[in-house]
Length: 151
Image (tube, rainbow, N blue to C red; front, side, top):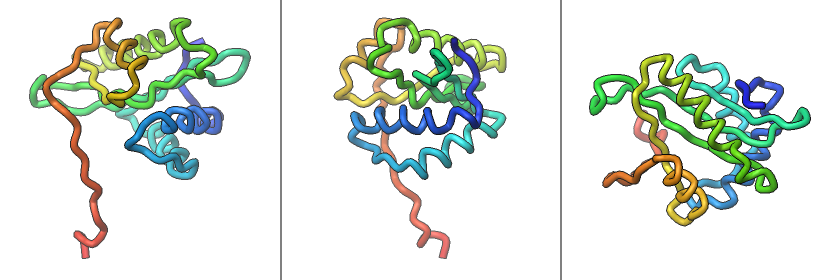
């Protein structure tokens, strides 16, 4: 079953994020930080968290946030944290989760979805490619904001 996440799902989602971050070189797992982020997403009107549930347990998840794109002249969705328990991969859950987010975004006027994927996660890259996602010429840069800037 694919449904909107609730606060009761947070512990299961934190465990899923632990598995995801174990294969992503750019992120370190911190249950406290991931829980805080999930709580923020669950209450943000411009965000959506969807889960796949089987036998009362969350076995997959994905998050999305709406952003304003000047390139599109409207809303775009930024997708993060698509993860399915390894034993249940290749059964359509990831596709179903992304479809649910696409429907949510389209209903709000978004016309593009975008995401970042770890370049070494070849199975994820193949998954996206087979579902019509295309690589762009852009790449991600990041910089942490230092509290010293504000003092």
